[in-house]
Image (cartoon, rainbow, N blue to C red; front, top):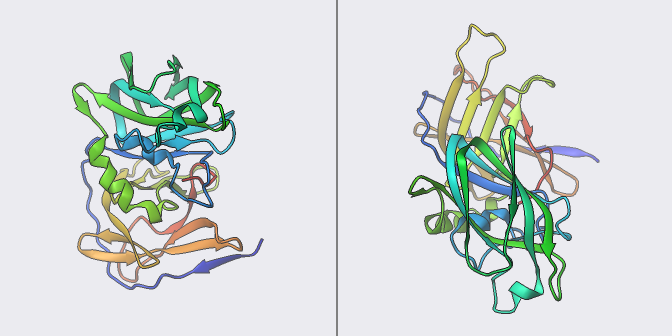
Amino acid sequence: MRKTWVLLTVSFILGWSAISVAQELLYARSNSDLKVKKKPGHFSALNLLDGDPRTGWCSAGTGQGAQIEVIFSEKINIDRMLITTGNQSTKNSFKKFSRVREMKVAESDMMHEVELKDITGPQKLNFDPPIDSRSVVFKLKAGFRGTGKRHSCLADIIFYRGKRALNGKKFKVHIRKQKKNLEFIDTWVCGPEYAKNRELIFGVKGIYYFTYVPTDPMEQPVLLKGAWRVKGKQLEIKAKKIWVAIEIRRDDAGVLEQIKVKEVDGVEHGLFGVYTRKSGQQAY
């Protein structure tokens, strides 16, 4: 299909500084969201992070092959989770939709087998040793079949590091705010074809994280963060006190395929380049 670049015009000067990153939960996404085109965000995996079982995620199909990935700003220890299964948006939806019964929880080089009960309340999963990873992937295996809908659903997942909950009700305000910007919340990569060395992540709290790992071992890696937003239809990132526009590329169907960070005359920065999704596919 024909592809076009759309320039969201802004011309500013860019400045950067290295940062130390707090351990933050950035986003959740899946490869199979129900009604993703008709009702974007209505069954988004982001709903799993808001501490409200009335909102949740449901698979586009039966759930076979469905995966949910949760991304953190850096490697983090997770010693327990509270998982609430099913669609609990109404009194009847829990039994009407299928509920997740078995799944795998993948982290780094380990895989955990998980079996859930067919109940509406939260179920605690303990991990000893703790999960130590920057991403956690939930792979659905089997479910309790619904009486009316075969879509598999989960209501909530709360991650804990010690006594600290990494997400929950405080996340809800951020998720609501980003409902219209879901297509950008993801991990984007740039660099040589077989060695992508620039990573740009847009998190649900309106913060982006940039990592550059140079091919030359004598060079130092770069780690940056700043604010991002969509103003009108314009995607922007903030460098110190300056908002800088990003070009976006869509196909003929209007699907976002790539983003492009341009160089700025007279200013050196490491973010320039064309970025594609690390996942290789779009889901909200």
